[in-house]
Image 1 (tube, rainbow, N blue to C red):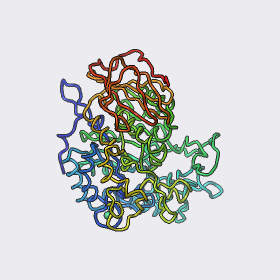
Image 2: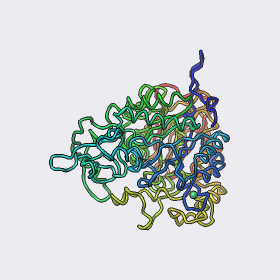
Image 3: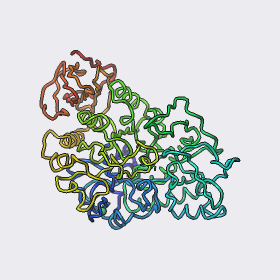
Image 4: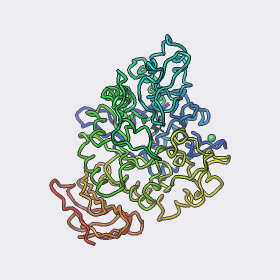
Length: 563
Ligand code: GLC
Ligand code: MG
């Protein structure tokens, strides 16, 4: 176990302003452990496999790794159904393997973040086994049990995210229990102080081993209406193929209760006993900028509420520019924004907006003011992998057709060998037809590849405080172009992103002559820019201006299309 106090950066020292927390400048890389690297030929990725690939992550230039759940699980929801919070599933290795991974991560100056799934357990968890054993069991109230409605049906109309009622009848005791996801994921009762004590113990177990923080699952789901009132119907809902029936109701009573902020302060108190650890939270998709801002509290709730807007908003310049500006304006002072462009739950970014725009999205992610999250494989331009029906494993897809998440969870592609170097056995999901060319070994040799672009963007960001500490001013969209200025007093940087497929010329919003330092096409550098900048289809450019005074207050000239 390592002593992390030397790395803690958020302990105030007397006189000096509090040091800047490391995560304000970090890029966090999400590893889906089943699919990163297999080390024992069972076809499933594991902790020793991840340890073997740490040099790749330092070569790439990220700062921290977040592992999706590695705990023992019957895998009904692929690890988000936890059967033991303080152990490692044997398929991924042992606690010793995790300790080694922590040590090797830290030896390289990287941080390691674990997933925490507090809202529900697996139905195989001993807590639930006890809870369901009888109405009098001391753990009965650790979960949400209710009598049937007068007609014998579920206690109310709440729906599961994954289809059907959120209630399951347990014939042994004649009561229903609540499961916001699949029936094998009973929801814990976060109004019971014993549950809080137990979860604090879980958090300390991992923090004591030296991990650098948690990404907390579905925090908006922790608390429900105390009176269990019905959710009202959603007047805008239109059923149809691919539409999740969950949205037939407005989840006014089943999620996002105001009390969740008190719980977040409680999580922070547990974390804050360990200097330098980060608390990241998954908040609901589609949250407004103002709602995202509320999850920071006054700086005493989440450090980093995940912002999925770039995955959910239409990829159009006025929409994206407006979001950037509103988000900056909504955040409380000192709050660090976040962006996520890919994860294990949603379509790959290269599938959603296409491979050319995926490069533009990478530039936005890594040059705008935020703590960026990179999903493994997005740096290779991985697309959703078409899977035959027999490969479908995800319970969501099995219950609500069209919602399967397996296509975004396929193995990482390392080289052109069998199964892309992921495993010498049979991979748990196929690697996909294009893995022979779209792999790390080939793309790192290609100086125009998306992998090279990611590495260059990460280096640019690390090497210039204008990108991390700099202020930001978002410009109004100009035609298809999204633009913003960054500045740290030494330099001004203008980022111009063409979200469209036509060549455009944009007025440069900074006086004087700058220099293109990076294009998403990776073929124009050291190019002087003044007055106007021509952007090709799907092109983003970073233009650096020397000797400025930061981003001055007042109105910047806005960009406009002239061709
Ligand atoms: C989160 C996870 C998702 C999981 C769900 C239920 O949204 O990211 O993968 O299915 O929570 O735990
Ligand atoms: Mg394995």
